[in-house]
Length: 219
Ligand SMILES: C[S@@+](CC[C@H](N)C(=O)[O-])C[C@H]1O[C@@H](n2cnc3c(N)ncnc32)[C@H](O)[C@@H]1O
Image (cartoon, rainbow, N blue to C red; front, side, top):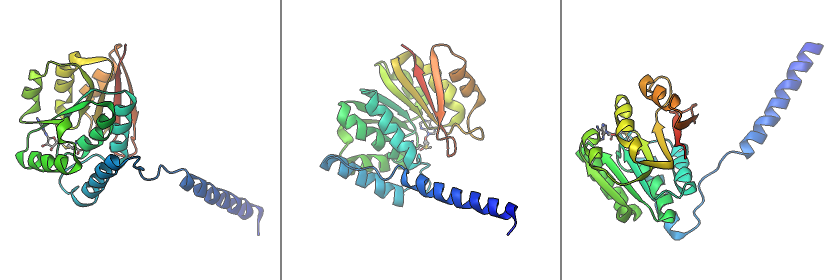
C-alpha cells in the first residue's frame, strides 16, 4: 500500500472516531422534571409528530431555545407574533410556568387560532395565554404593558413594523427574537435595523436551519 493511501485511511479512521464522539454529545431529548412538564412535553411531542403539516412550526431545537431564553431571563411577559397552532407558544409556556409569567400571542387565521386554543387547553396552559385573533400590525398598537420577550414569527416583511411598534415596550435587558433569519428568508431592512442600532446587541443562532436572531435591548 502506498504512503498516500495509508495517510488517507488514517484520516478516515480518525474522522470516524470523532463522529462517534460527536454522537455522544448530541443534546438528547428534553427530560421532564415534574408531572406538569411531562404533560406539556407530551403535547409538544404529539404536535411535532402529528400536526406540523401546514403549520410552519419552529423546529424542536428552536422551541427548546425559546424555552431556555424565557426561563433564563425570568420573563414575565412574552409577546408572540404568529401563533399558528400554538407550538412555539407552548414552548414559551413551559418556561412561563416556572417564572409565573404570561404569553400574549397574535394570529390572523381563525382555523389555526382555534387549533391553538385546543392545544393550549390540552397542555394545561390556557390560564397563561391571551390569544388575540386579527391582524397583529393593528392589534399590537393596543398593547401598553412592558414586554420581556418579543418573538417575531409571522409575515417576514412585517418584522420591521412589529419592531418599530414593540421596541418601545421592551424592558432594558429584554429580548427580541426573530425566526427565519436565513438570508433566503429574512428581510434585509429588519437585519439592518437590529444590527445597526447601538441600543441593541444581536447574534444569530441555529443558522444551519431556519435561523434565529436574538437581540438584546441593552440596559
Ligand atoms: C410561521 S407561522 C407561526 C408558527 C408558530 N410561531 C410556531 O412555531 O408554532 C406564521 C403564522 O403567522 C400568522 N400571521 C401572518 N401574518 C399575520 C398577521 N399580520 N397578524 C397575525 N398573524 C399573522 C399566519 O397565519 C401563521 O399562522
